[in-house]
Image (cartoon, rainbow, N blue to C red):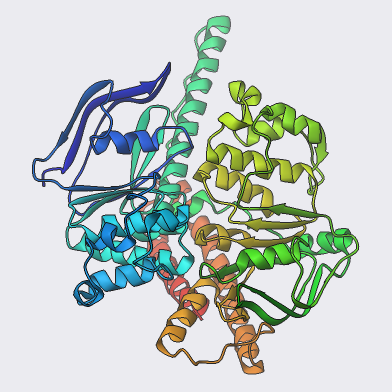
Length: 587
């Protein structure tokens, strides 16, 4: 099948820095390509060249003559005096556009709460982005190019968008998307392009497959480098001592993908972190009793009673406008409840990461702004770290250390904001949309820090991957004043939202949790999972031993045949146990 867009030997740079170096690639119909890479490595530049918006310094871009391309950029959409209806529907009345179920679902799901007759000039930046996304998706394009489409969408809207795009690509639509939302990339993409150091590395599959493939490439590269260095050492020894002894080359067998992470421990030891957090915080962190809060006649919290303890790692979800930020600011003491009481622990030392970056001084320099806070800090793990080393870990090196904060990109400012928060050595972290404007590599650095951070963590995020990665329990603000526990995580939240829309009068579960029978079922499920994991561990050990025996019995064909049969039976048992584990895990 001919490509819709082709790049041939494309090179492009800014100043002395080459972002794309002799790139040749293309995009075919029905391809769903996710573009990842660090901030500033050329992702947006690649999209601009692919769509014809930017001419490359060298090389050629060919767009098939009949190909229609729709582009969602990070710029604002429409004219200030236009209405939303004019921009996305060419002014069509409701009874015309709503007759098409696909258009109706798209508008209702992504523009919920936005009056179609509002003027563009009255919308917030996030609302304009959502209008631009709907405008692109409503048009009949062959290829859509989306730059951070999940920004300003809640988890429900992101889930709908993933399903919508998957259905459209089955019908032939091609898509390229730059996104830091790893759940979204895994849900919609069939290929991943990693842009780095002037090149594009292509991987088949979604985000999870990309991570496994990248680790395998790194393992092979490390093996090759170790072999090269070993050969160099041997040659040096020969030059010094004469002819080398005869050596045989080792044979390397690539194990299954699971072996790449078989010796990696779980990201967090929750028991140790809980004990450490209790010693730092005591028994009390936040106790909310009968808290009421509202804005503009809308009730956001209706008699909320909630106890948050040391070491709790809480993810908070909800539709836009449900009161998530208001709840965080109530906890942080930036707002006062209309009624009820919020008790805070005496040893609480709070770090609050807001959505804004206004607390940064644009005229200040990066290194100076950090050194002024603290040149040396003891992280919660006990590790001593200098401001310079932390800056390096967060991607601030070279000229960036002396750059004006006002000259930094949005992602760099967000990184600096989080780093400054760590230097204050908090024992309670409240993070409001921490993933905004950050690239995936930076997110993994932050996740690594949070894995060993032994305090109370409360996170509001639309990034489902990040939320499930760093928290242990989820709660939802449903927009009716209630805050409910989600034992099943984000999936349960989406199910509850669907049930609410189908039956608006359905009562909500209280924040205190489920019925006793539900708790008993959950305990039994955990027992089943533990039993299956123990059996899987034994089977894995048996398989490794069989591999070792087969290596030593390479010349004994009879024994090798017997071991092969045993290995086949062990892998069949492993597959059965994995299927049973998946069934138990899904509840």
